[in-house]
Figure 1 (cartoon, rainbow, N blue to C red):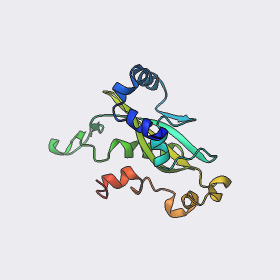
Figure 2 (figure 1 turned 120 degrees about the horizontal axis):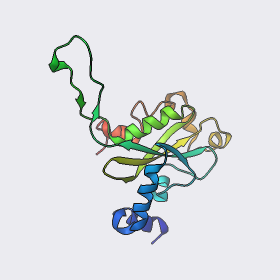
Figure 3 (figure 1 turned 120 degrees about the vertical axis):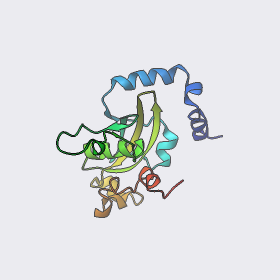
Figure 4 (figure 1 turned 90 degrees about the vertical axis):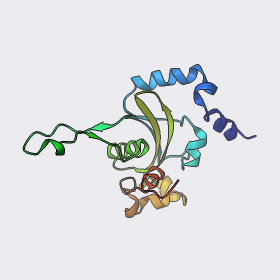
Length: 172
């Protein structure tokens, strides 16, 4: 078996296979900022599967998203109480929310894809792979060159990433 197969097996049930390392990571991630740029992927197998390459112009971000139903601020003003609905069902999945937040934070980069790295009772963490479409190394790479076209600049907001396609009903 190759290395990636062992990594994939370890991440099937991370709490049991990673043991104390899993708990230590979650404790550390809770103390970190919501959006954090990281040097290396936590899950190399998933990162490579969604398009990560260890080269200039490719950036990794770990994004934290709060779990649970999302609330809107209470509406003050003239309307009947039936229409002041506060608790909202979440229509987007957490992964798509994480990708959109990263895209807003880094507007000059293009979100390629993302993958799950952890969760506890309150948060979920995703690692988002971004590409700098104006970097010379990316422009020379024929696999990533397409990110520089204008139609792919805001692909995360158009639901073109895997998480977005899933929420649009285009994937299982």
